[in-house]
Length: 75
Image (tube, rainbow, N blue to C red; front, top):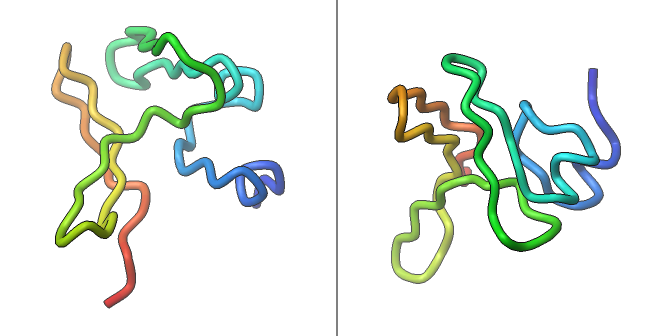
């Protein structure tokens, strides 16, 4: 099921609700750790940048090692 608000705001984190995205937090599905940033409106993805262009967005939990690629630039 597509979530329209995620397409509108550019959120790639499947583990966030609108409220979580707005308050810049997400809960790791593996260990349950809540990750937060002192900002608003952020999907908290780690970005891989090559030659100044974002090529990949990933979710990373440093506590348990959970990692998931949620977006890749089409080549």
